[in-house]
Structures are given as C-alpha cells and as structure tokens.
Image (cartoon, rainbow, N blue to C red; front, side, top):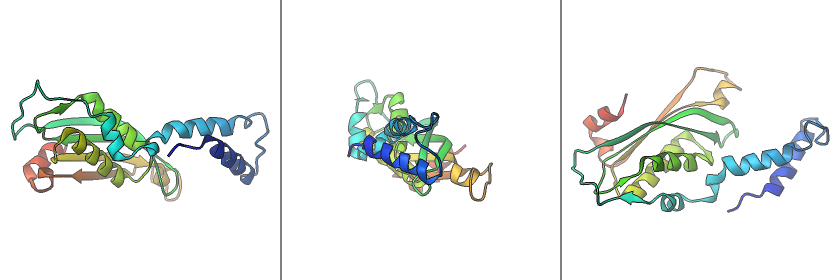
Length: 190
C-alpha cells in the first residue's frame, strides 16, 4: 500500500478549515505539503508487512560464529518514536531493548535499530510494536528465543487528557525460552 500524499494534503487543508483557520494564509500555505511529506516519512513502515521488513534486513553472519545454548545477545536503548493509533498522538522517548539467543547465525547490530525504526513507522500500540519487533527478529535470526522490552512516553497521556507528564509505559514481548526461564528474564531486565 502506497501512502497517498495528495489525499493527505486535501485532508490537512480540511482540518485547518475545521479548526477555523485559513489554509491560504502565509504561514499555512505550504503546511498540507509539509505534513504529507512528514507522514510519508514517519509512516513508511505502513507500506510493509513484518515479513517484508525481515526480508529487507535478512543479511546475517553465519561462518564466523559458533553459538552455544548459553549465548545471549542484548542490544539496549534503541531510540524510536511512533504514533498511537487511538489519538494519532506521539509515542516518544521510547527505548527498545532486544535480547535473543543465536541459533548459529548473528545479525549485524545496526539491523536491530533499522528493524525497530521500520516497525515503529506505523500507527501503533506499544504492545503491538514489541510483538512486531520480536516477530521480525525471530524471522531474521532464525531464533525462537527473543525478548523485546520497551519503555516509552505517550503524549495521549502526557500532553492531553489526564496530563501525567512523568508517566511511562513498559511492555515486554517474550518468546521461546524467555517466556519460561526466570534466569533469562533476570538477565534481560535492568
């Protein structure tokens, strides 16, 4: 599905009118175009399924790595942002931690950040974002033992409604051995 920038421009113009402003005034003339470009960028992940994202980043290293069942890779503090599907509000200051047990191959570290970015570039729920990342990492690494922990702030709670500016949301998506092995769970939690 391609993002329809022309439709976005028309709808943004309509929103400006609905807000009681004049979309033809100097400060707003180019706003619909700017918003359409921004949406094309920040919602790029909506163009791809989890499987397609996994295919984008499937280059792994197999020859140089011998894994043991006790090996554990943890990547912490991958910064992302997304937009809540309920209010189109920004989910920000999000930090993603990913852990996995390699199964004979490893993924280049920058690929984890790219996977997180692409999965976050959708209308999301934090819970679904963790599940999407875990699913994509499992596909790419071939490991069913994957954990994704996300900490984030949601402007639908901090900037509107209840306005609790220090509220943070924590989610965990645990797969394979991470679901049942309390020692592994302790190793990934701070």
